[in-house]
Length: 139
Image (cartoon, rainbow, N blue to C red):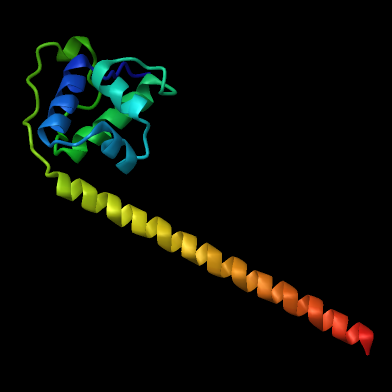
C-alpha cells in the first residue's frame, strides 16, 4: 500500500492559486460537485469530509490540475517532499470557470428535458392503452 499524502504545501498552493484566480470556494465546489467543507479541508486541513486520505489526495490533485499544476510526482510521501519546490503558479480567469459551469448546467438541463419528454410519451402511451381497452370492453 502506498503512503501518498496531501501535504500542507499542496494545500497552501491550492489556496494561493484559487485566490489568485479570484475564484470563490463555493464556485469551485459547484464546478467539481464538492462541498465547501471539502474544499476548505483541502486548503486548511482535516479529513472528516473525505472517505479516505487517498480520495482527498486524488481530489486535491484534480483541483490543482484545474489550475495547470500537473507535475506533482506520483508515489510521493511526506518525507520525500519536505524540501520539494512548489509547482509554477498559473492564473486562471474566472470567466473560464464560469463558462465551464454553464456548459455543465446546460448538459444537466438537456438531460432533464429528455427525461421529461420520455415520461410524457410514456404517459400518453399509458392513456392510449387505457382508453383503447375501455373502448373495446364497451363494444
